[in-house]
Length: 277
Image 1 (cartoon, helix red, strand yellow):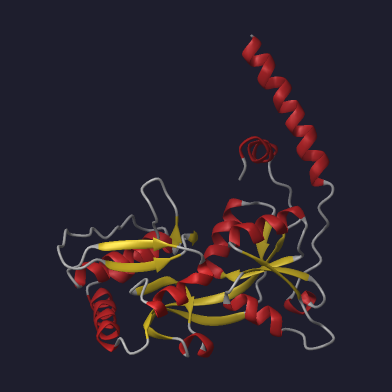
Image 2 (cartoon, rainbow, N blue to C red; image 1 turned 90 degrees about the vertical axis):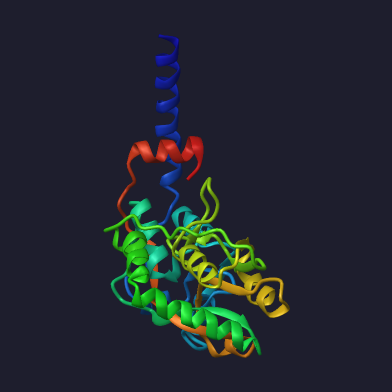
């Protein structure tokens, strides 16, 4: 009885607490890309979304860019009402849209781009080897199986890495970008991690995943601290001046995440209050 009484009081408190807090979140003011003018917009620091947001609107309709170390933190800022929208890649944006009923993605696409891995300049041998591995992945159907599992939701494929005794292949990523890379109890998982395993197996080298801040990945590859960077890196001319890109392995869209105006369930708000998101 005491346990039931305790939880009853706690749930009642949480409903009151979350309900009171929610009223402070402003209603959505962004319904199209043009509405981003003069608004606060959250972005992942050092991402192409940050660049696109900074270039938007000219002198009279500029975006007030708010940078966050992870996309998750930008999304939480949007949920709290600290920013009016978030610019991010479509695949992780869909993950957050599915996770939080209070968010939605605008139909209008902000920008289209491609993902590729990176290797250091002048390391042409490694670049050719990685590209051969990517070609083989496509030819053998491994690539499609991976994407079907993580994005299509029609499979549960995972690439099994065989043991190897060569020099360690160090691949830098930032495991804060589902479904391409995210942290689990077993370590980083996701599309890029599966690709990393395949490349290491192709090269007959043991794999080491170096999980670092997103804005440190290019420097890590350029300096030799990592051999390859795989972190849903968009291909840009600015980055290409520092490192070489592999063949493209995915298409991406920069989309706009906004508050939907729909309330999240009471149970979800209680869980968020008690245990965090």
